[in-house]
Picture 1: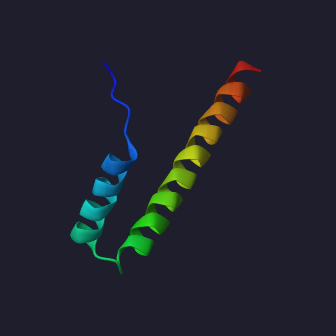
Picture 2 (picture 1 turned 90 degrees about the horizontal axis):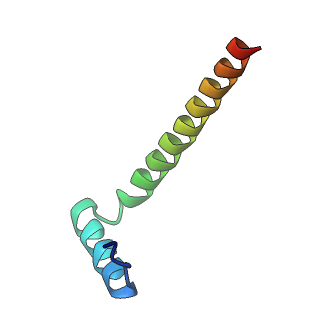
Length: 56
């Protein structure tokens, strides 16, 4: 049902991303994705903290 991604497929995905975004934009894209992930995790932690405060 779920396919396993092999090395050739990952390489193809990386090449497509480089063509679409260009080599100069990839660091900016990676930085913004990392920051978005950090903010998302922070939001989840805040929600858990709020939930624990209301239960107590």
